Amino acid sequence: MTFSDLDFLTHHLSDFNAFMLLFAFLIMSSYLFLSMVSIFSMRNYLRKNGFVNYHVILNSELAPRLSLIAPAYNEERTIQENVQSLLSLNYNNYEVIIVNDGSKDNTLDYMVKTYDLEPIFIEVQETLQTKPVKQVYKSRNPAFKKLTVIDKINGGKADALNVGINYSKHPYVVCIDVDCILEKDALLTLAKPYLELSDTRVIATGGVLRIANSCVSDGGRLVEVNAPKKMMPRIQVLEYLRAFLLGRMAWSKLDGLLLISGAFGMFDKEIAIKAGGYNPNTVGEDMELVVRMRRYMIENDLSYSVFYIPDPICWTEAPEDVSVFTKQRSRWTRGTMETLWAHRKMFLNPRYKVLGVISIPYWTFFEYLAPLIEVAGILLTGYLIISKLISWPLFTILGVLVYVFSVAITFLALLTEEFTYSQYSHNKDLKRLILGALLEPFIFHPITIYAALKGNWEKLRGKNSWGEMKRSGFKTKSLPTTSS
Image (cartoon, rainbow, N blue to C red; front, side, top):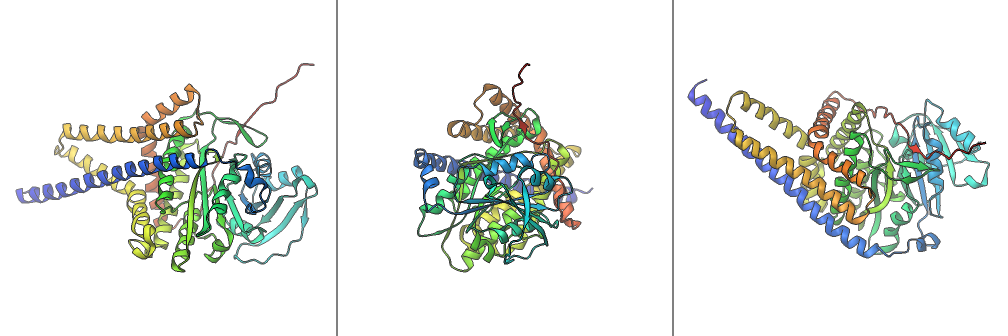
């Protein structure tokens, strides 16, 4: 290599290093900014809603009428308890629609036997195009009059949700994962924004998700909250705390929320249908629908609001196996790619206000591209080490700073949790979570990066399927035994 070649390489390495430092500074600054906005927003929310009697909504004739839609595919392990949970929520004006999306196991048989279901005929206008429905069931038992079960040809989660929307009776739909357990008052708090605002139309609200691994359920209710014993779901607890308490609260305040989790979200059915319903051609149907509904409102000059509510809790089971986790996160990456590409017109477009100028660019650079840029930085660092061009003292200092910042943000999320909802009250739980925070950058983060790379590769190869997610099922409370 000549001196001119070396000078050229050194010059461009300096440019790349400067870019990497600038990118790291911007992403860390954004995390701090969003965290501060979330904390102040959370404090104001608790001050405003801390003494609200939500049961007034329960008895109000003005309470929104809701249709809970839960797709089910091979859920025989937990389907009975999950349906029981949905039927026992504190809310009057709601129905429960379970859409059996061509399950290959005994999901449908278990529901038929447990809830005494019989086939019925319902004439429905299929507003949204879906796979064929084979049969609709209702219970002979008046205690389960809220329940409707729809058996259909397999078409994926988005298609199953569209079937539920077609068959729903009420003006608002709550789309959830059937393997989740909702808090008793979750619907009351989720419905509150629809009663409060009169100048704007609330088109969507989303609640917080929590990890239920190692927690104990009884009769469809969570009766004991524990930090997961296994490291993978434990670190996901921390990830969810950061995402929901320090992320979505801020985006909601800034009017830039792009994502309402598919596990628990409430939507204005009329707007959802006008926007086209769920897109069965994407694996990120939850994010894509929210973006499309917001885009519809803006393009039609309609005033609207989208809210994130931090306290209606939905408990879900997180992957405990690395391979299952990788499948989930690679699918999330593909879903993000599909949504950003489908709505690329909004990128840096001031017509779409905060969404176009801030939210879409943020998700593009700091959510989708961040893993790819990080891998490029790792490869460059490896080259510099081999070429002996790296300054080890500077490299060590930067590495320590990045690690400290990562752990500090997680500790901030834990502190926010402790001073707000404090779900993990035992010292053993806090010790587990603190240990998870210290180990996360070494264990969890590399797996997440690998999953993002896998998602990009799968998308380039044309993969468009969900893949099956194996679940262990919720830990149930054992009944006391009696001696004879």
